[in-house]
Image (cartoon, rainbow, N blue to C red; front, top):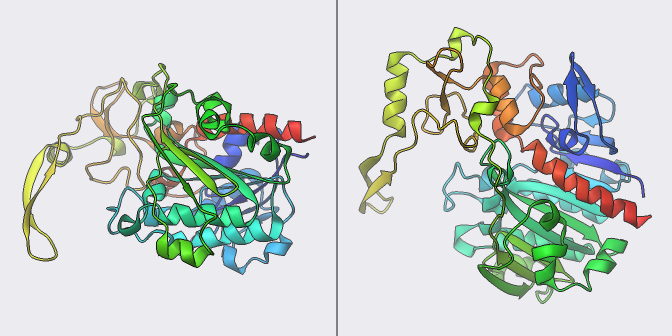
Length: 412
């Protein structure tokens, strides 16, 4: 079976960089992997400019890269492929919003799931590899697990089994404490499906599945439960009635779901100081005394009287954050607002001078595992920060891709 890929919501190419272990040498892209990317789609409806598409196409070429609304694409015209990948937009599930205010699968971004569902139905790729914020498995607050249940039912209706794991990259030796849910689906027509359907579901999560081989966990579950998505009449019934506590790991085969809470088992730490640029840094990244004081206040502990929408009084509290950031541990989760004057922006001590400053765009690329200057394609610094806040940790994709290669080779 060929290792061919279609990439949705491609952004600046994180999946491709990870699967093909990409280098950027003298502004030339070197793809060191075995995956052949047949077609990609990247479209941002909220802006007139398309910086992510421009970056992707500049690095990989404009051939077979689509820059239109995915809903306008005739799914029959998408090339047949072995692996469908995508970090489908997650703003409606984002940790930047409270769970009660996120709109989940009914939100403007959440509805993009249905583009994936259309491709599953039309093209039936043997394997699917997706990424999203971990809050996806909890959404919405009013009916916990409904959105992920809808997705699992879509996979089930199209003949797939699904394994997922919430992975905090910082717990596995990567540069950033970025927690995301990674989803692998495989069609019942594959040898892999036929093999996995006969293995105990608990064993899949603990030792026999795709994730356990690259992301070791303890040999005990902290909690678990089971449910059955196939007992519901249809998707409407799932949407109206399904509710479940999904944990950070799980498997669905033949509509039967087993989910468990697992703990990471890893010892290597990637300290933030390793990604610092050691050259002289442009003065624009350094903080004035006034900015330092603002950050000190933003990152300090606080208790603020507020009112709920119903008029009820309450106290909003926040604990103190390290200031400046601790250089001996991985970076915190990077948001699209990185470099702004906000509580979540990183502030570090400069390597040469010891003065406090913001991360540079190159350091942000390193935090996600991209080659230096990957997003230096004509966009502003602010946009470069935004792109990295939206990106995934490339090394996690690389590790999962290694397992997928072995599985696909066995299909032959």
